[in-house]
Image 1 (tube, rainbow, N blue to C red):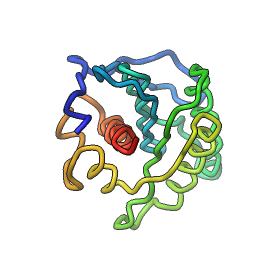
Image 2 (spheres, rainbow, N blue to C red):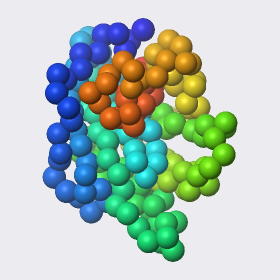
Image 3 (tube, helix red, strand yellow):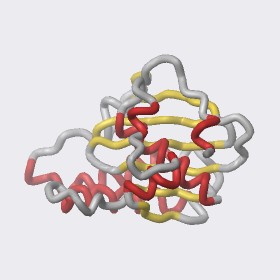
Length: 177
């Protein structure tokens, strides 16, 4: 499994500069020796994780979209779209694959709002990849970590759980190439 080659940072993620969509965006850099592929894994939500793999560099982000009043919550889809475009705009090439975590079908609450936010991340990423698709959470864990019951946060306890899920999704994208 590719994830076993991942060299994680020894310290927790660091706070990045503010942006207009997320005031608490955090970042860490890991290494994946020998990798030559470019993929992105996204764990969408108001609390999100994004893993951008560029060759041997694994850029790990997590944060929370800025809070909106209840009557403005549908705008989270616009916020997540604009944020994703902004974050990926530094990369002047197409990624081989971008995988976005799909719905957890066993969950009953919050799925409508999450679907709207997920759509924003999808739209924000669509111009940055040769291929973009959804992957169910258990499939991401199975393909990226070797077992559907393996939780990424158990492997990397120093990293936020949304970022860990994004890493697992990115690893699934690499396994698919």
